[in-house]
Length: 371
Ligand SMILES: [Mg+2]
Image (cartoon, rainbow, N blue to C red; front, side, top):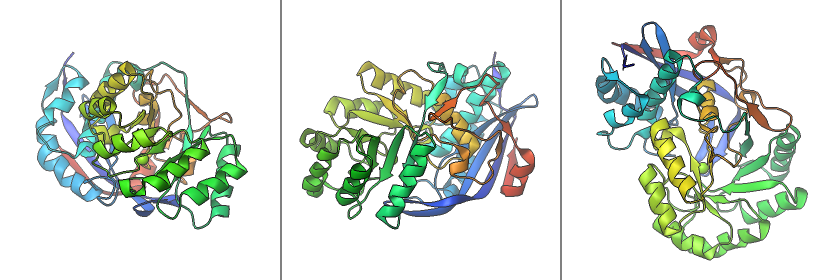
């Protein structure tokens, strides 16, 4: 069955975070998010552009995504007939970079296909390897070590299975030592968001004593070669995030020995089609993957849940409960995590939750309908 995209509705929403989130590149207090609705015959699929408010994680930001969607992505998909959502990635691959913006539309069309096939999104993408996905949390840089320890305690008591802490120079070895002293046996990992260089190799090697599951993206956001050098010098597995933007780059990183784990983010990789290809490359090489987070609204969160049902997502990801981020989410029910730190998959069509249209209207800053 071919699907012709008759209408794209873009919505720019603004929602304050429950707590600020700090990484090595700064603090985020409030999110500006673009949602994409792709419609045919009165049925809508939903996607989310996961770019941040500033071009600090990658080159994209909310402000760049809006015109790109209108001027370059929409004209390539509107009134085009797709026989499979797998074709959407190629329709926009003439655009250099901007994977998160492209993925907003790509994921909406996967969701639309799932709904028109009357099946859940996880089934549409070929997932379903597990009925519950294991959840971890990502904890930003805090004002003090006692505050960090308190936050970790709260998350462990809520059931989360692994703790990821953000690190940067000056907030690393000594802080992790305190965390390990307090919590000797938890699944613990550190994410540096590219805050180090090979000049820091001695400091990074000191992390080997803490039995971390992995250190995520210690070196430059666009580097694979130095990571290969560093991995040879570290016992701790390196997980790559920012620098893996395609399945091909994932293959190259694995071939070079630049990592032993890969974090797959739907937006960074350009949507479900390429995420599946990267997942398969990793599976063939025995490299486990997990799903990273970008402070998504409920819609992006639900897409991450579907993605996490593919077989090689064997490590707990960053997908956590709505309430960790939002006082009220734009979906009902909100995403909830069990006392044992899992999210249950459901059998509803599409991404598996209802859009709360009344609340969505309240947080919408601007909209654009393209036909
Ligand atoms: Mg990361």
